[in-house]
Image (cartoon, rainbow, N blue to C red; front, side, top):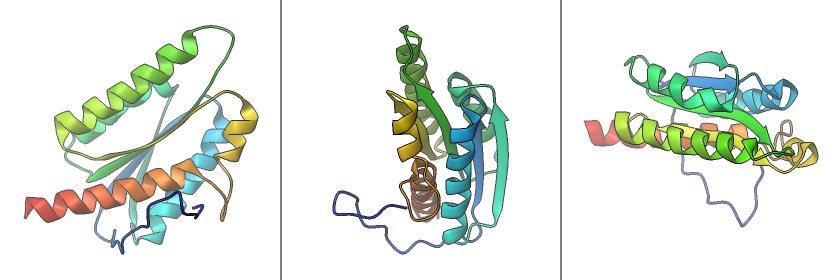
Amino acid sequence: MASGDERASTPDLDGSGLRIAIIASRWNAAIVDRLVDGAVRGLESFGVSHIEQVSVPGAFELPMAARLIAGSGRIDGIVVVGAVIRGETTHYELVANECGRGIQDVQLETGVPVGFGVLTVENVDQANARSEGPGGHNVGEEAAVVAVELASLAADWAS
């Protein structure tokens, strides 16, 4: 994960024992595959060993899959990853807005935290810059940190 003054420090987290699902969009697969790699890397860095991976056609479908998985009772947190790249029509706004709103609804309705690793960018260069490999900026890895931190918080407050 990229470091810098603009990012909040990550507290010491222990993700061992957490069950985390990664839900990935298949649209823009080359970029999303790097986000998934980052999410796995991030989860493993905190000791998460129970990782389930699911894929869906696109970012618009991420909230539905997240809702189904959150409602299963089989996981403690979710990481969603995808890439919505602006095109020539307003389709971008529809997909990006509804994906974000839907994911927020899922976590608020179910109490299952969702790390949001969906890129909403102007072009492929921006997407590539936000899905770099180890040591670079990877939004999937950042979303994994969020999922572990909030799942840990939820577990602490549930007991």
